Length: 181
Image (cartoon, rainbow, N blue to C red; front, side, top):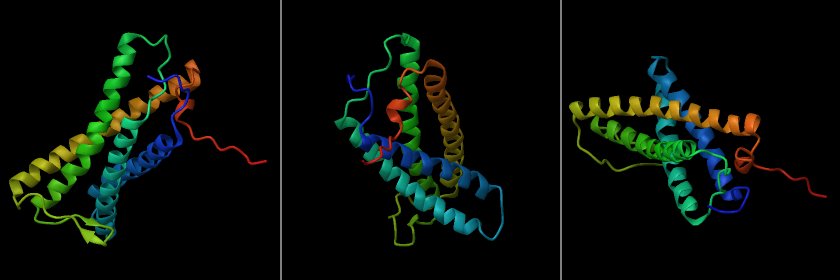
């Protein structure tokens, strides 16, 4: 752990950009599976394109995270709280990577490619199989709801650090906008 009190700007920008996109993805995903409206196909195309973008951002976040030192957690954090923070972070990264992968596998199992904003299609990773499609669809849904739950925990912990403990943990990830003089 580092003595720095704040994450570098690169980590903050990647964090907030991916957070925004992931929350949008979760809500688009839930909305589009609940509707047969004419916009559903557009939502699906947006969902898969942004999913590819999220995957790329998460990989960039991981690479960035490997080259930086995170600020140390407060010294009065208990062992179980430290374990919970680290294991939740690992679980969140696993889900952020596994969700787009399961989405590609689900789509490919239906015999369909994943398009990236109409610019190009990703190559097919698996052959068409309705049994596999059902498995990947179920896994994708379970992981999406799991990620939503982990995000709620993450936000709750951040707010607890920022509003109740006021120990600098939340502030370490907030973007600061300084005025130029």
